[in-house]
Amino acid sequence: TLAFLFNCSNKIEIEIPQHTEKPVVNAILISDSSMYVYINWSKRISDKTKKNILYDSILLLKDTEVIYSCSYTDEIIHSFNKKLQSGIEYELRVYIDNKILSAKDVFPYKNEFLITRHIPTISISEYSNTSLFEVKFTDSITPKKYYEIDVVVLSSFYKARIIPISKQNDVVSESQNSLLFTNSKFENSNITLNCYVVTDDSDSLYVFRFKQISRNYYEYQKSLSIHLNNIQTEGDLWRGAGNPSVLYSNIEGGYGIFASFQQSTDSILIPKN
Image: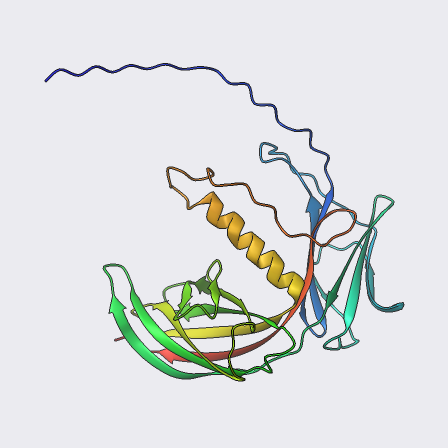
């Protein structure tokens, strides 16, 4: 056998665009009386330095009425006494370094659901079992609404963790470990979704978190899912070689997201086989 190998190389200079750092706000209304807020600076992927951000104050407003305000704190969960109202638009303002960052979001309504059926171990692979969970809820079809479902498993062997969930048909789309969808493909108000979940061979509690989410939350999660899929998985030869994508942002004066959801939960205990 005769083989020939040839190799050539060339050094390519890549011009990295100038980066101007901006504040990044991640703020989510997680109930009618609490809000998650995390603030940092934007940076290039090659920048390994950490820079702490010290904001002056945070305001949550309904029109001109101040619902909540606070000066700088290390806490990221903020609770307030005034209950938020569904269907009402709220504005977040962050004051930092003589700048005002702002965004608006409509606080969604809360919808209830039930796990009505469970079929254990409908398929088995070398590493995992898959079970079927039937989820039912009602929807008015109009106006347009946005939803997310994810599953947290609690067991004696693992810490609480979000696990993969998939779906039966094209009514919903799969995000990163969640189902992210709108009511645009619903044909009637009584909705049944067959959800497939990887289950453990141990006594485990599966907690389904059913969220009615705002449009901003939906658009951000959808763009984040595209971004993470483009990055590929850890250890993949082509990790980081996907097409660039733009993360959804609604923060004026910076980057990030101000969004909201209302959540209801249902759970089922699956004993060890």
